[in-house]
Image (cartoon, rainbow, N blue to C red; front, side, top):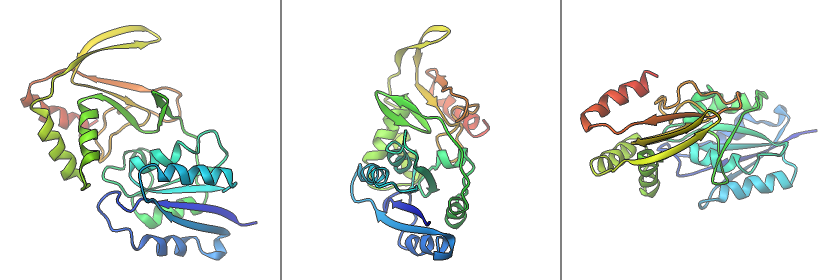
Length: 239
């Protein structure tokens, strides 16, 4: 019996053209691989989630998301609680989840991992009933991410531009964090909650996070003068 696979491609994720991807998918998942593959491109925000939900209802064996962390998150949340396996092919700007899980950034190699059946169970988190797999943020990080989502172009340069445009005028807030050990009240530049270890591009905001320990890691960054930001960036990339 053939294994059924739905491949969902986000055509605007990252900066790389997506025209050659369907041919590569069909080349890797040939008839003799025992796979029956359907390829769909997303057409609007939320479309990946709809396609994944339909795949669950139709009894598809595996759903593959080709795109960035946003596409992966959108697709994966519709598969939680089902028996459908989830394949990740990183094609975004940062690819934080794929890097954490050591999924190849090479298109063919990532597809071959899915074809060959490599799999593992992972945790996920929720924020206001929204599922996330990699990281969630409050404060400056969230503002930069919102700005980045509004811009038509992708890539690390766009993210850096959003950072620079916002950092000078940003006003830190005071937050209260409740944990099993008690309550923490702190003024913070930002707070990151990590199921995985990094934002993307090997910037490790919760460097000790594991996707299989049943825990979320929290990093609180206190307010700092602008001249301290390069030192913080060095800490991110050195774990």
